[in-house]
Length: 324
Image (cartoon, rainbow, N blue to C red):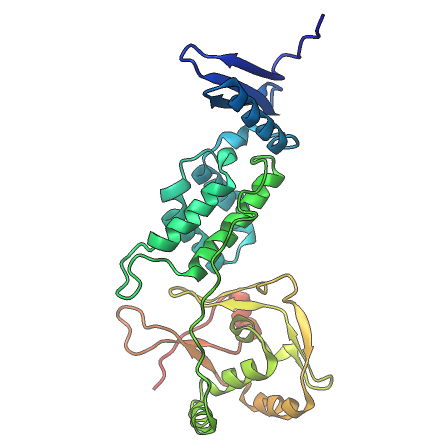
């Protein structure tokens, strides 16, 4: 006499409409009840093939009840629980835009645990052809390759966490075919053009120090904006990178951590650049500011301070003034 299978281990039956139905256990609820994955097919042979395929996919998944959320619901949950505490402000705003404009309209209503690699591939293909929200005079509704790659990076990060939390059996963004970034050819300046460019930089009192600091140190612009005089050690010839500044389109400066975990570092300045930095200390008490777009009601372009002092950093912002 054959042994009876445990309750909930699986099932294959023929329905009244003539189709074959099967189910397998893919996880358990908090109360211990099984979570089933149902499969339909026209023939028993076709059904068994689908069940064996799903058994391989869900073998080690052990999904939770959250696996029944839609992709849109999961992404909202991820943004609230993870994104709001781990992402920088600009990245957080970008992710919100990607989810609202490019993901939810196409895949937001599908159960997150049932999204496949093919669904991701179709999404990227559709976004590439007609994903732009507003018609562009040159590109129409075609989304750029770079934007598709950014959306993929966001989804890959979110669904990687979903796989870790047993919400999806695997990350459906793994293995998809992605477009290659197409960059416009860069213009190479000849000697005459370069001399004219450097002469224009030297005449600009606001951007001159900023430009040469970026050129000689390789720092990100936000890192340069977060520099303080105390970060420079003239005896050791080093510069410490301890913070970064985000300049939103509206509102006060946001002073916080560096962009990456390895961002906090100490760099050694080449000897030929130290005299210039030491000489710059003569301007320690002066304001060196960055321009930003003028807000409604403002005359001219308002300015933001480039070199921070300790008081500015503690307040989390800086004052603005007009440049003559």
